[in-house]
Length: 328
Image (tube, rainbow, N blue to C red; front, side):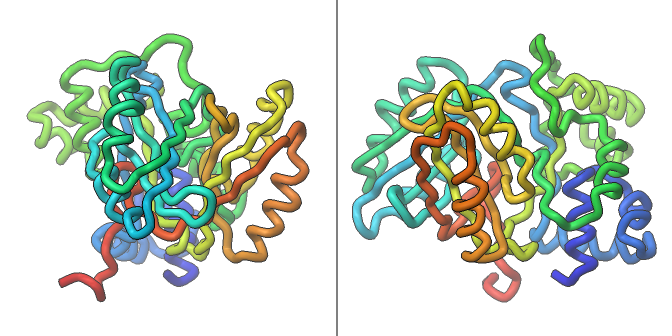
């Protein structure tokens, strides 16, 4: 990517469904140039815009982080098998105290029991499993935006959104019907579908489809997200942090981390770690500074484990695109 590409990506991260005209206003180029560049980024798979039917907002699913230790030489195969699970949203291979980490959605305690006590231990090559249930999110990938655009331009784009990119979950579950779910499914594959095309695919009036989509966004049921691998925007050091913080300081620590532009997501969890998240940085030196200054100064910090990601096997339910020069 060149500088203009990165600014366009920043605009799409701030507002995934921003029109080409809205993007051109903040990146200071023509609408035609934006159209051409966005099409290329999407076509090559460098950037993907998706709609996510929020399982927590609709009270359908909850999330679990799992950390796996694998036998020598088995980590890649175990991660690939885990990535094939439909309930698995992300998988990374790591270097550090564990070999693999994944985020998994579950629908009930029975489902969680099957995942943790049957499915995970039965994965070939896995000999140790740790699990941490997500109980509160301080920052999510929907709100992540590294320093690609000026703050006033980010505020301008975010002000045009209807979906709650950073708001807490609604007090009452957001409800959906079959048409809503059809719309969400289509947007999960292409979050920039126009209203006319979306209506055709749903066999419904485009006005109805737009009204339903915007109602789901306003209710918090549907969240839009621009998915990009951090290294493609100049952040090659991707890592997972697992922290123990004094419970009396947990909320304060989570809020502080959520404000940092290097934090993709951070959540309070149960289990042996009570604050877990993902970070992306431009260099090892920046990682050192983040560990020593940002993590080191957290109130109530008791233990910190930082594992650097070697490969993103799956992100946001998607397998990262293969670069064009490697395609066969």
